[in-house]
Structure formats: structure tokens, C-alpha cells
Image (cartoon, rainbow, N blue to C red; front, side, top):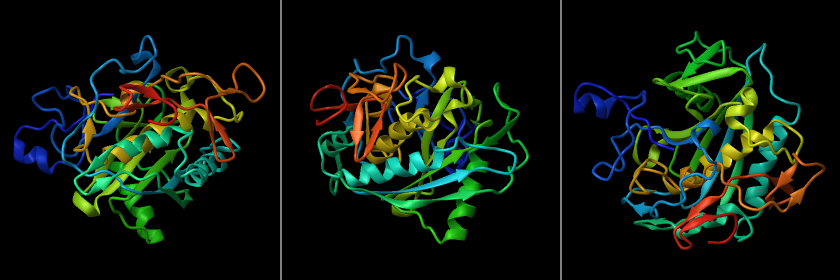
Length: 321
């Protein structure tokens, strides 16, 4: 959806700020907006009526910034004592990333559409790998924000601090080909400035630092904390993870094609996932009932994922270009 950026009094302070807050979307005169934005916000279902994203707008344009030629994914599950995730949550999400890697080069899934995009040093490759995951049981910091649906809320700055701590303890380093996804437990809210999970967004991606050493990350709230906001209603794997996997794919694809807000987006600031948010195309079948439809077979897994925008087809696609 629209980008969210820091609102401060002067431009020099704006460029140095680290914590984004909500603002107007970029326009033709300022398509990318200033640095330190939160990008690729998955809008809640209530914000996309009728469902179908923003696929009728113009194609994506290139703005001279970097893309992820190859990508390595790291998953962090922040589940403090007293909080939970569903029984198969971690295994299904880890398995999804493994399946995406197993199908590198295949035209039969939504990730192949990314290969039409490029930067000044070359095209995106169909090359994803999964570096692994960790369960982070550190307690939550004192609530730094307040949202409408949860009793605890972490800010984007608090998420960044936690991620950097986990990275340090595991010897992980940033880089333009690495994406760190932070999956918070059920009932944990988050806000970026005045924009909050389950009210304005279901997930977003962003970055810390700049250039080749930037830390690329995504905030992945537990989608079924508020199913009416962030769950499309199809669970082919019979688990809450199905809802989170849809928005995970959205952010993963957008980080690949617009890692630091300076690569591929349209004249309104929408990235490839934004333009097709909550647009699922045709189902391939179901795994056991009307609410278990899937539209993607990736590796050994079956998933219900939104489409991604293709410039070559000028529409949302699930496969090919």
C-alpha cells in the first residue's frame, strides 16, 4: 500500500531519522519519498474494497536503486513467555522458504515474476535460499505504542533493536542479498508512528542503514490475531500460518524488487505486491474443504498467496511473467 515516512520539522532531521510515522503517500513529484520509509505496507482487508489491489494503475518504473539479485532469508520468531503461536506455525513458514528455494528457476510460482526486474548491475535471478530460523524468547520491552486490538505494542524502533540483538547473538550480518523477517506471536501489536497493525497494515518491509551493508527486514505480525483484518479465509495447511504466509510472500517479493525504496514502484508509490494485494486469481484446488483452497504448488507445499504485478503482462500474475 502507501509508504509511511518520518514527519519532522526540517529536511536534515528527516534524513537522519530512524523511526517512521504515517504521512501522505508519494506522488508523481516525489514518487519514492525520503529515506527511512516503511515500504510495501500490506493494507488490511477493510482498506481494499472491493478486493483486488491496485492492478489497474500504470506499470512499475525503475528509479535507479538496488534490487536483490539473489536473496537469503532469515526468520526470527519472537515468542516471549506467556505468548504463543499455532502448533505448525514455525514449521510451515520455515518449510515455505525451503520450498521457494527448492523451486528456484521454475516459472510455475509467483516468485518467477520478479525476474523481469533489474538494477544497474543486472537482473533479478530466480535464486532464493533459506538460512534458517531462531525462536527469540526475550521479554517484550515496555509498550512503546498503543493499538486498537492488543494490550501490548512494540514500535518499529523496538523491533529494530530486538532484531539487531538477535543478529549479534547469532553472528548474522546485514547485506543487500539478505532479508530478515520478524514474526511476532499472537496478540502482540505494533505501530510505526500512528499506523498500527490490524488497523492500517498486516505487514511491512523496511531497512536499517544504507547501501550494501543495510539490514533489510520485514515486520510480520501474527495475521490471525485479527482474522477479519489480515486473513483471506483460506487455510490449505489447516493452520494460522496460512494467513501469515500470504502477507509474507507479499513482503518477500517486494523486498526483492525494491529493497530500499529506490528501485521498482509505480507513479503512486505502489510496489509489485501492493498493486495486487488481496487479489488471488484462480484456485488450483483444495486440501479438504471450502476454506482450504490453494493457488500455488511450490516444492512440496500448497499455499494460497496473492498475485504479484508483472510489467510484461501489465497485470497481476501467479505464474510466469
